[in-house]
Image (cartoon, rainbow, N blue to C red; front, side, top):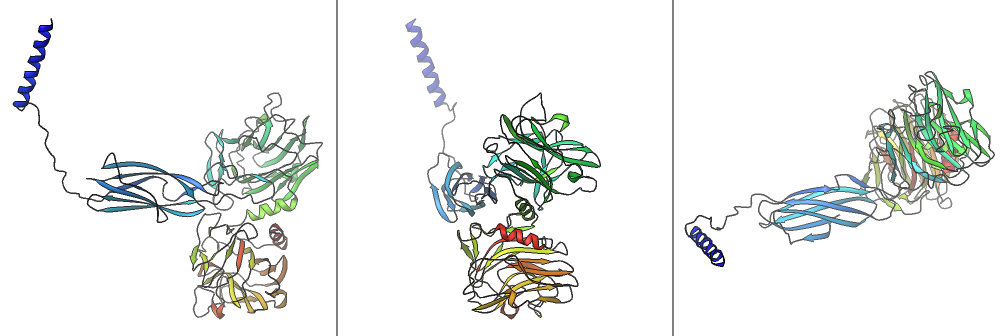
Length: 579
């Protein structure tokens, strides 16, 4: 047997030698790689262009995921953020295709640029830039605010950065401030765990609602126990719902004290005709251990005593449906819209309700917290010169800090849609320039650099110890001056603190306010926006710079613009909100 085995091995060996000698097996030969025809190709898989990182950490992390390909050989790759190299690569397992991930943990608030630079063996170089940003950490806007959903194309609580559990297929529509809002659908709603929300003996909610009355009964908001024997009349937690008919819908609040529910059912005061009242309505709920109330468009429509407020055994927060725990009497899905949902661990006062509602009616808001971004649209201002920030020195957080020949502009198209206008802001002037413009939307008319026939301009002038403020408003033919003199004059050497200003313009009258007091008011024969240019902030440039009303090197904070004329009461609310 051993002889046969050796004989077989010998025959196989001879066969292989013969095959090689007779060229039955291809020999190994060198292949010419050819010429290097093109520079490396770069693909960034993450982040996508325009990505915004949302985290409440001061410094965040992003995992950069990218790919580089070359037709011959990759020589080196450099990874940069804002022009500074953070990583380089020169050794590759595959010289033609490289896949890499890099965790960058130094992402600060603001705009950034990721650059991937790749060089091949012939020295040909490619670069790909991707813009990304880190949003400022959300700062609660009101005392006791513990939950906020703006519904900006996502179902996220901005304080915890947690996503809702989505049931069904809700979507998005146009919101109260022109952005996006929750839009309901059949058998669809959101839930959040109630841990951290169902605590303490006070609770409030604020939100905008646009109902869909095809369903004549619906649950709006609830945190209630799962008790099948009592599907809506719950002994603890709360539920807010509506019911009625196609042309009459009333709103009702139930609050549990631990033993039974108290009903807040005011009838006609909380009833709407959805065929007529078909726009956004602001709602607020306020609950303490001794009383509860709810509001519609800032008006208290129901209020009454409670013998306690209790959270025992409540389940999840349910949004835009009574399901799963508050669906009795068919108070189920609301297919309408909701926007700007805020929850509080305190009972809201009537003034707080009206302030929240008013601020959420603004069409433009800049908080100047480390960026020049308009908060509602996310759009960045065009920055002229070198303004900066007074970090931590503003009314709420940071403030705009001016500099020589520096200001901000925004397109005005979305701000000039009607025949009313309002503005609210805080100001600290720099009187080293004795003339300056604060805010304007005016036409570019070189022959009339400030006395404009349309739009408006707000300015100051005087000397180092006396600065007076003036408002000009155009009716389409000429400008009306609001120049009250002494009531609108300050001594900047002694009045060095923040001053609140408000402007209110309608087709029939205009006024402006300082620290809540109306210092000027008068009649108008119309209000006109014809041919106006950009909104200019903290300078008269480029369209309202006559008589040297140019840059204000002072500070500004909390700039709100409205497409409505502000009432004295609304001005008071806005000022008090900053105190």
